[in-house]
Amino acid sequence: MTVAFSPKSDFLRVLIERGFVHQCSDFAGLDEKALAGGLTAYIGFDCTAPSLHVGSMLPIMMLRWLQKTGGKPIALMGGGTTRVGDPSGKDEARKLLTIEQIEQNKDGIRQVFDKFLDFQSGAIMIDNAEWLTKLNYIDFLRDVGRHFSVNRMMSMDSVKMRLERDQELSFIEFNYMCLQAYDFVEINRRYGCLLQMGGSDQWGNIVTGIDLGRRMGAPQLYALTAPLLTTASGAKMGKTAAGAVWLNADMLAPYGYWQFWRNTEDSDVGRFLRLFTELPLDEIARLEALGGAEINEAKKVLANEATAMLHGREAAETAAETARKTFEEGVLADSLPTVALPASEAIGMGVLTAFVRAGLVASTGEARRQIKGGGLRLNDDAVADERAALVAGDFRDGVAKLSLGKKKHVLLKAE
RNA sequence: GGGGGAAUGUCCCGAGCGGCAAAGGGGGCGGACUGUAAAUCCGCUGGCUAUGCCUUCGCAGGUUCGAGUCCUGCUUCCCCCA
Image 1 (cartoon, rainbow, N blue to C red):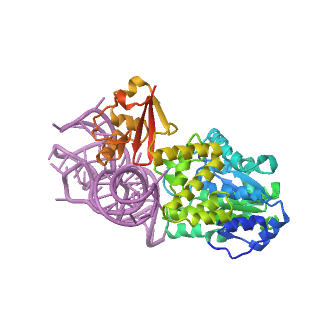
Image 2 (tube, rainbow, N blue to C red):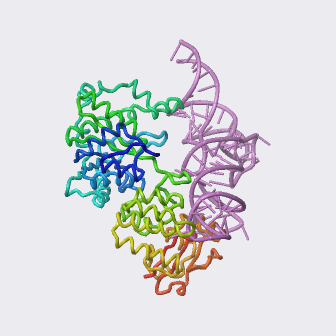
Image 3 (cartoon, protein in one colour):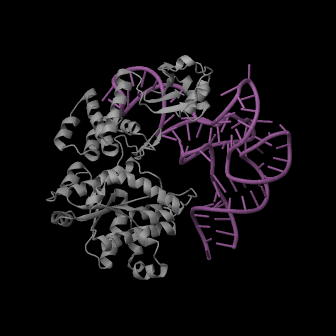
């Protein structure tokens, strides 16, 4: 998406240059506010999982840039809205999370924000449970509900689509918009926040909030959305074979995170460097221009920078080194993911079981199939016999290397 | 309130004359080719202590040697009429 507007403020300039901007309710007006300094903006995050995943990196980076350009970022935890459970999507009797679970999730998510935002100097994290749970239905209807135009909500794309397709749109879901809109007004009232950002799918909700603000006498509010991120081949970002690409280290080790970025498609490298690193644009332009196999250098830079920001420079370097040894030298790197077993159990264990225990395959049946397809390797030799067992000699220095395909390696350690 | 449809492999979509571990796609995984890329081609895509055994077609019963398929009841969803 090319944005024609030429901003005067650093905030908008950086966001536009780097490709964060999809739509804005009023570029000129927002630019002015940003230029005046101290712009406060927020983004909402769900608390449905104990960690955010890469899909959330884009909004997180927007908050980070806001702070870097002199603004005040607010990370809003959806503790209140998560309690209702977002009903969008159709099937699934979705289980409601308990309040304790939500609190735990919040703790996990907070760890990530600590790395990207500076809470000592202005950034804040809030939870909409603080005000939403205290709402009284009658009061809410009287003071807030009357300002919502159902006509208008019916005309929103997300709603129209559902109606046209005869898909159910539950009352809760409809109310979700109202709560989210109310959040915006409430956050403005409490923190003087003028801007809500989010993914492009949030446009309708944000604009509803602006509308509500106007009717409730709030100052002019603004919306800014980021493009929905897909890879160049159209897949949604953030899912890989191993599952979601989590941001918390205890759910995905730095090595795995590094690998995720390293495996970026060629045509995504430049875009991702702009979005997910803070390298200067001319440097990125240089990296992006690399052709052929040289583009791999750009991918390494991307992986290093992105991992360093999340897990620290040291962890990034370790991951890079592990990858270098593993892929470029074919040497066994002792920092690969490791699964430890008692020696008594490990030696004599069937290969099928071993790969299951290492977490590379889900069942012995899958292991069998992978062997047929030549996908499993033990110490870099293809496993040919599914009945083979691990012997003491397989453990060099107590460690055997199990591989699935070319990229996934796990060390099995006999203790 | 009346009438007519629908629910399939625990990722999704979807075929399925009483012999079914169940067609076909998408997605995913693996192999070949490469550069840890893309594109392309090929294979795989219920579980297990495995020439066998066990569990799967909304739920519960029934008919049958044998049920995803036929019958009955129930649940949920959709459409038309009121």
